[in-house]
Every structure is written in structure tokens, then in C-alpha cells.
Length: 370
Image 1: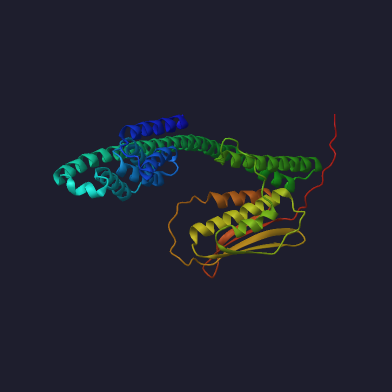
Image 2: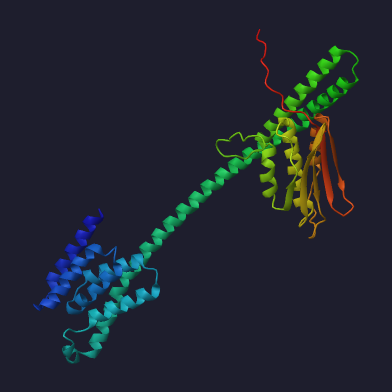
């Protein structure tokens, strides 16, 4: 379609040149033919094609060439001063009498009137080209607005889904997680205080099943709280190997000291990781500008982590908090028969300390089949 329009414009311009040609001078005729032929590439080189059309407009009384060149230039250019200068140049070239030696013989008043009419004729394609350009820009803007609205609707839908998931997660955490935690704690107490072997084994089994159920439940709550996209991927559970990345990416002046054995149970690794994560989060919220030290330690029967931060160096903003994070960490420690402690330090900072029994990761055993 574009090639057909280019051929049509070139044909109309050539016909206009043929109607208005009044000289057989080869230079003048060559300039006219070159101006008509150059219209085929006016979209790629609008300024060059316009300049090639100025001599033809000076030599002959043409209408198609200046109209096409000015329209194309106004359609693509955004420099208003450039458009004004080109309009004046085209109107001046069209109003001058060629040869210029005959200009003194013309009526000056008539020339001024002609210049006014020709200037108005030159302004018309410029206004038309600017109108088409504005229409094109407006269409692109409307498309961008519609795309932004679609994106906003998608975000709103995702936000509503995330709220529903968060509400469901809170209900599951408040109702189920608390009850399973109590079962695990009571089963652990029964395991310690029971006199006969059968009761102790039953209590141990109940506690182990409760710990596993609570861990899976918390994993499910975490997934429900995810605000993922269309396909939520199951992210792997954190381990001790992820502590370095957690500390480095905390946004604090923090350091990690010490190490733990590689055969620590997976549940204990997750508890240690969550403890460090919650402690660093609290430092960011309640001790701006403070430094934090994460120290891992272990002995023959116990292992743990201590997170200590210095006093804040900037004004602390009052942020809302119900201390659910510390309560959850204490519940995790109780399930693992450990101890969780937190409180201020003599230097004005804060310290979080977790101590849990050292249990190696059990090896897989064959299960009996019925």
C-alpha cells in the first residue's frame, strides 16, 4: 500500500510539473524531474527531499511537490522552528519570479499579495501533517493507558488473591498450628514423665508426628502467603547453607561467625535460619543504623545461634508490632525441646539466643510393607 501511495504521489507531481513547465533549460527541467522522483523516498529522508524540491518550486509554479514535502516533514518532525523556517522558505521560493532579473518589472504590491496566499497554502500541509502526528501520538498514548489499566486490573486481582490467601493462612496458623504445637509440647512432657516403655514410645511417636505436621503446616502457610504470579513455584526450604546469603543480603552492617556440623537435622536447620531471619528483621525495624553479629556455636550435646545488635545510631520510628515473630520462634524452640531467649544487652543493644539439642539427620530406613 505504501509503494502504491508513493507511486501515486510521484505521478501527480510529474503531471503537475508537465502542466506548469515553461522552460526548456536542462538545469531547470532536471531540478523539476529530480524533485518529483525524490518524493518516492520522502518518508526516509524528509528534510533532504524538501531541500531538493525548493529549486523546482523556484523555477516552476508547482503545487504538488511543496505540498507533499511539507506534509511529510511536518508528519515526522517535532521541531516547530524548523517547520516554520521551511514553510517560509517554500512560500518565498514559490513567490519569487524566475529569472530574478525580471523581478524589478513585477508589481511589488502584487508580489506581496501572492506571497501571502502562497504562505497560507504552505501552512496548510504543515498543519495537516502536525494533526496526523498528534493523532498518531494520541493513539499510542491511549494504547499505553489501556495496557496500564490491564496491568492494574491484574495487580488488583493478584492483590485480592493474596489477601484471601493471607486470611486463610492466618486462620490456619491461629487455629491449627497452635493446637498442634500444644500436642507436641504435651507429648514431649509425657515422654519425659512416663514410667512404662509403651507410654514413652507412644508419646515419642505423637511428638514426632506433631513436629512433622507442624513443619508441613508452616510450609503450607508460607505458600499461602506467597503473592506469586500465575504459577507459584514451590521454593526449597532454607538450610544452613543459605545463612551467608541471608546475612549478606540483610541490608545491615552484619557479620556471620562460627559454623555448625553438616549433619544437623533439617527441622533444626530451618529453625536456626528462621531465628536469624526474624532477628535481622527486628534489627532493621527497631534499631536503624545498628550493626549485627550472627554467631553459630555447638558442643557435644547442643547447638545454637546468637544474634546481637548494637544500639541504634539513628532515631527509631515507632512501628506497629505484635511480637508474633518472637512467639513463633519460642514455639519452634519448644517443639525441638530447646530454649529461646531474648532481651537487651548491657551496652544498650539487643540479643536473641536459640539453644536446641544436637540431633544428626537420621538416615533413611526401609519401611515394612503389609
